[in-house]
Amino acid sequence: RRPPPTRLWLSALHAPMLLDSVRAALASRSQTLLPSLHAEGTDCYRLFHGATEGEPGCTLERFGDLLLWQTFRDPPDMDPQELLPRLRDLVEDETGVPLRAVHWNARQKRQRSREGVLVPPGAPLLAAEHVGSEIGLKYRIDVPPPGRDPNLYLDFRAARRWLAANSEGRDVLNAFAFTCGAGVAALAGGARHVTNLDFSQSALDVGRENARLNGLPAGAFECVCGDALPALRQLAGLPTNTDRRSRGGRGRGGGRAGNRRASGRGGGGASSLAPRLRQRAFDVVVLDPPTWTKTAAGAVDLVRDYQSLFKPCVLATRPGGTVRAVVAQS
Image (cartoon, rainbow, N blue to C red; front, side, top):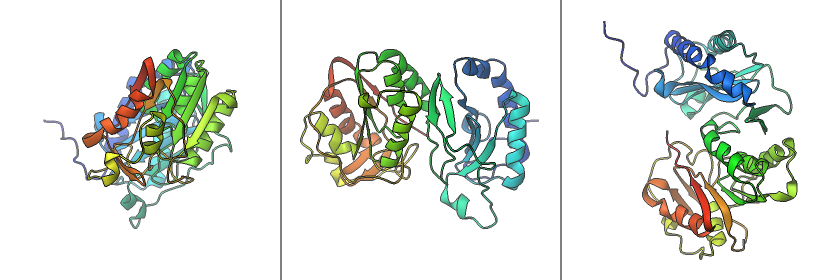
């Protein structure tokens, strides 16, 4: 018989099939990948990626003591109060990793508000200062608010690894910094000075906490709260009143999109525009913007107008420097 086709975008997750797919994914990871990650001091990683492992619309990730299951489409056809403990037991049995908390993060609003769908809290609660580790560095990890991102983007690990290995003696600009994971990796790798730029003050506060957890010098870890659009232009020595994106734009948020951040990746504590900044040059510029979002200063639109972000980053980079540009997709 032919195998059943992969479910379409809006079909509900079928719990027995999901558990079978997760079990197969864990078996493939537990022999080589997970031991190598643990050996390098990493306990934050993706255990199951539904889009490529037969169950589109969900992911299962470990962040230290937290098991985080995220759904991006319809909820499962099993009561989450029953499904979540089964996912945790499955992970613990297959990997031997004890987990203190399991949490379902429903990313679409209609999942969280649909009548009859319960979203259990992350219980038992995590430690007050729960941390996860990646390549030996510590990061503050909280249970994410409903529909929001966790504190650490796992798909950015390769860039953080590169920064830890290539930042010694360099000045680094971390644009769209979120909780400053890239900045922490760069400073831990010997950077002379790191400037973290993000729209969310609350995200930058977590970033400062991450630097403290790793014993990094506060004087070399600068956090600038403001809109990245005018901020990048100021750092590059460009006028801020000629931003072609001020007309806004049409587009659909995808991946790291506008519902998660304005000009950064967090929510709350934001200032509407960038503070006044002097022109500066950096040895390394990290650019990891959302796919599309609109801010008070204009619109970030990577599909139609990527050059408006990329150009000031290049101009703010010293000759012989590096721009690490990332395009997030979902």
